[in-house]
Amino acid sequence: MRSSKNNWILSSLSFLLLLILWELSAKFSGWNEHVFPGPLQVLKGMMELSSDGTLFRHSVASLYRVTAGFYLAVVLGIPLGILMGRWSWMRMIVNPMIQFLRPISPLAWIPLAMLWFGIGDKPAIFLIFLSSFFPLVVSTTVAVGSINPVFFQVARNFNFSRWETISRIVVPAITPSVITALRITITIAWLVVVAAEMIAVQSGLGYLILDSRNALRMDYVMDGMIIIGFIGLLLDGFMRKLGHIEAALWRTMGRRVG
Amino acid sequence: MGQIRIENLSKEYVDRRRQKRSPTSPKTHGRRVRVLDGIHLEFDAGEMVCILGPSGCGKSTMLRIIAGFEQPTAGAVWVDDRRLNRPSPDHIFVFQHSGLLPWMTVSQNVELGIRHMEDEKEKAALIQEFVEMVELEGFENHYPYQLSGGMQRRAELARALAVNPEMMIMDEPFSGLDFLTHMKMREEVVNMHQLIGKTILLVTHDIDDALIMGDRVVVLGGRPANVKLDQRLDFSHPRNFEKDEELGRLREEVFLMLGVSYAV
Ligand SMILES: Nc1ncnc2c1ncn2[C@@H]1O[C@H](COP(=O)(O)OP(=O)(O)OP(=O)(O)O)[C@@H](O)[C@H]1O
Ligand SMILES: [Mg+2]
Image (tube, rainbow over all chains, first blue to last red; front, side, top):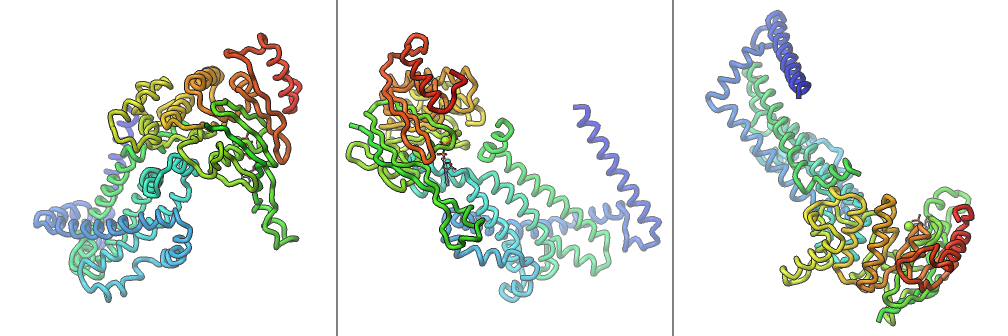
């Protein structure tokens, strides 16, 4: 207990030190306060941005796009991964395509996305989808392939139907690794949404940063960055919580004991 | 009902690894390794058959074929006039390492074989009955990782028994248990067998297991493996090597047969 309290104090102290160093270097850098604002300036900007609801509006816009794209990727990617993991003919048909498209950065799709989907939410959602879909398909396929074959023998022994084998063996068996994959993927998606919003839309945290740069308000730019980091942390925390649900516990707990 | 005949059973595996490593014969389809060679055995319904043999001789392979998980290269397994060639709840396999589904609780695991029962009340009562039979009451809602090794084995036994199978196929059900738990489980399986009279095929490394539990002991050996000994054991339970001199002599014989002269 005591040591965790000490850790906490130490962390806050080092954070405070960082703020002081920041303020000092901003003061004495010789740069204009619009180019390199200190923490106080940034905090003031944060107040301004939140008081008129701008910050909230942009955050919601970004979160909406990430949620939509990520959700699409989950709904399509995980079932495809399961099919590919279970049936080798499926793997043979789909895998080459996946492996070829996977290493292409989602940002390289920006021109096509804008051409196909125009201006607005759709191209951004499409880019998020791309950034999450391929990692999810691949990790789900791998997870299915590494299920202990004994479980499938149990399924055959107890006369499981094909559907029961999927729902009562495959899905619970891959849940822990899929949750880990979701956690990594949402981080990628969150990175991509900011980039996507710098191009095709008039809202979102990425747009806020770009717009503030054009207005030479670096304090607003930094506010945008801080909120991006903060929401990223929240998303990761939420995903980590997901790892503690009962369905995922059997593996971590099993490891600890055995 | 239920006489089991293993007829001229052979199994070959293709060693694919070797194929890649030998550039001198690039066109061969891998070396074929014969594991089982013309196994012939007959058991009566309700017999407890204990199978011994050195490690790697093909005991698990034979059980997997009988369970229908794998197909033999030649020969067949018959129950009366019905050929066994695919897995079925009529013959439940108890796995060498735990076969419990780790994401299901004890009672969910026990339910697997009776999940289609329509009367929920009857089903719950049946689950309870078998959980109690293996003395796991109070642990119904525990996950396998919350149980000790011995409790996991008992849970798997309960799951197998709940199906009311014609035959139970057990691959080293006592491996990895401590000595006391091993002895207790041995007793439990004997009691259970006398109570319900199912056919049980049980592979074990432990010669004493086989001689104390079995109605029949089978020793496999050789490469490829065939039947070295197939002996009925008409001794009453509980058995004891001092009391039954003949059993003691048989024990020595089996030890020697498996290449051990020191432990005797
Ligand atoms: N799928 C497989 N492919 C190739 N060879 C196999 C395969 N399964 C088993 N073998 C080989 O068959 C032989 C017998 O294996 P098996 O697991 O049946 O032995 P076992 O008698 O059960 O041994 P243990 O007592 O150690 O469990 C081994 O030499 C093994 O290498
Ligand atoms: Mg074995």
